[in-house]
Length: 326
Image (cartoon, rainbow, N blue to C red; front, side, top):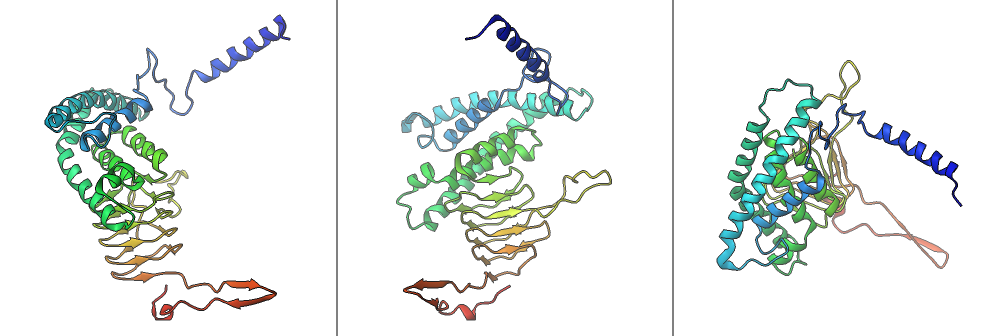
């Protein structure tokens, strides 16, 4: 049973906690307050991303079917709404970043936001063309795929690359916050973590997908296929004289055209290049480059099979000794 004294003590604790929680020590400013910067919030940005995906794939994504005769009207109306919502969000993101970086109030945030939205609208036809190549690569690269529609509507690798190609356009325009929120939204939905800065060529397919990580300065060529658990990451970060990580340098590998990287492989380093046409085997660890048309795999272990008190080595796979190893 509570008493007036215990209620008073609880109220005191709440008041103390509220006083500590009303400021953000990390950025030194407040957001979503009358005097602070009114950010749209993560859900609003994710909603715009969902709308843009529905625009790129009308009738496939979104909550309602779109009659063929109304597709153009649907796209125009939805794109108008999305562009205005996104422009406001981008402007607020630029204002927040300006204050965080302690730059002068140059009044340029509005112009930058308008420029970023225009760039995205202009880029959308090319984005869709590239995504169609990604979808084709997924359909042709997976024997289990029964139709193009199945690939578009259900494959997590396709969902992740759709979000990435939208976010990457905004990233190239220097938009803060929003591209990363979009990519992390896709990450939460698919288990695939692609930084919006990564440059990825057409015909890209991630099979299964869970656990894939692609870092910010990664470049990937045409017709590349990854399996689950692949990491294209960075080695330990170089630091400046004050001990802070140096930003803006090449940290992640380059993967050239027509490369296949199997499950669990880890490829690290900004100087690492995987040559065109190469195959990287499962669970391989690479921190240096390999030439074109390489086959890289771990030597097959010799597991023991036990039963009835005896054990025997598993025979080596036929032809394994003929392959090159690193």
